Length: 101
Image (cartoon, rainbow, N blue to C red):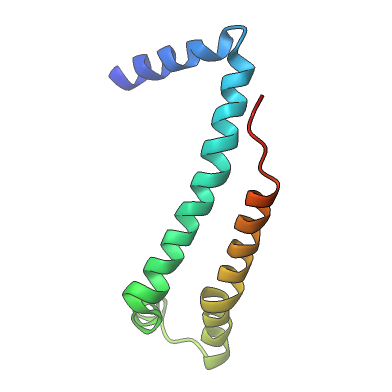
């Protein structure tokens, strides 16, 4: 009940004349930057802090043994492809950043 009331009160901001500004502000700062930052932290946590080998062992415990090529693809994604793409997206976001008006 308390959560419903809180979200109702937060939703009232969206129906004012400045509502579209608030929606754009939240969309601009929370959706893009927050998700990108969370993805980078998750990738760092799994691959470099917890360890790729331990993560693969955990997955194999859950789904069974897979071929070497299967894990080679996932290692390439976790350690090279995804970090490069996230870095490119981050750089592009910083270059094209314009503050909301």
